[in-house]
Length: 154
Image (cartoon, rainbow, N blue to C red; front, side, top):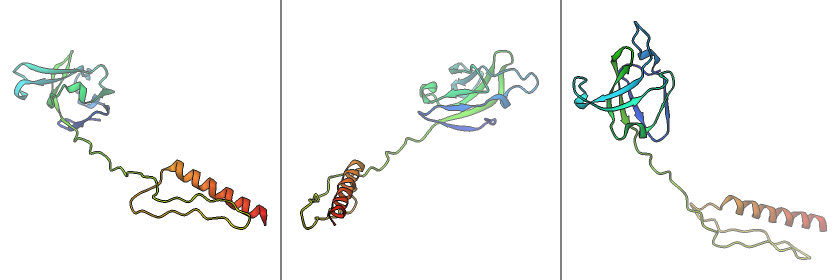
């Protein structure tokens, strides 16, 4: 539930707001709009309106504001301008997540089965580089096949 005067960060992901407790306590009529006025002064012209079809479940994101963040006054079609405000600000820009670059290992020896011995799978470890999951699965499958073939010959 949104509280009077609350500051809400709005980003690309939709937010769901419950505005019911901001209704006029005498009439309890629903809130039908959020209005932004020039210079935050309700006596001046309306700059931006966000319609509120359901004040118990208002789903909004940054596109609803058209870049016009700031103080919004609550409005009811039956009661007119209400005394409560909500301050909307843009959410901080998401920083790109760190990604590790995956490169194939510098040297890979594929195990071969001979009549006498099996050459083990070896890799030269390189700090900060991880093998991709499909490569690990293939290497594990080859290793298991080599072990099973060696065990079967004994």
